[in-house]
Image 1 (cartoon, rainbow, N blue to C red):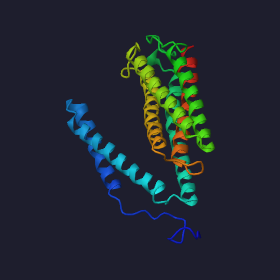
Image 2: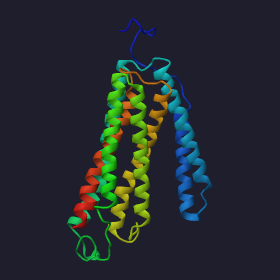
Image 3: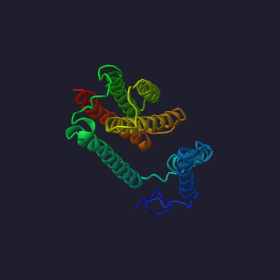
Image 4: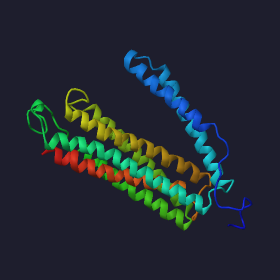
Length: 265
């Protein structure tokens, strides 16, 4: 029991919040809107759902930041729970990508007669792994270095270096996404019609989506660092973003090695 805590305990009993219910409603509208868009090309319902989800996420995260930075609810016990939660979330993400690797290796190691019993299929013009994919690999490895630099600078109390490291990391994330979009636009195969395109775009596309989410995550941390948030011994929001970014880095290394390099021979 902490003598500094007026509640007499270290746990955070959250106040009633509208955001879980509103997030569910927004996600439901988004899903229905996506179905309507796929069938009718009318995107308005989907856009409304997306805007609702973004608004709720912003407000919910704002409340959590206030709880931790101003209200002091993120005690060591609460931070431990947050660490467990983030660890389990990343573990679930690992299994998510295991599914796409499983699909890819199942198709490539045991090619069926429908694709000519060979892998890659004979009618597929592959992407050069030593061009944009290699550049993107170097970009992500460098970004992992810069976010680690920012983390160590935060632990040492060097806020200027924290901001510099995060700026570089966010810029590198944006550059990676730009190269990925360019690669997709110039690919000589598409998602539909064959298993190669489906497994390629699902695996690399979902990774690209995670890069965008991670870039936003780090951009929020950058804004918070510039606003004076985070202390050397109280910065789990930053740590969670760094963990997530390193996870994205590692997944890309497996994608590059398995799908781009091994899959091209």
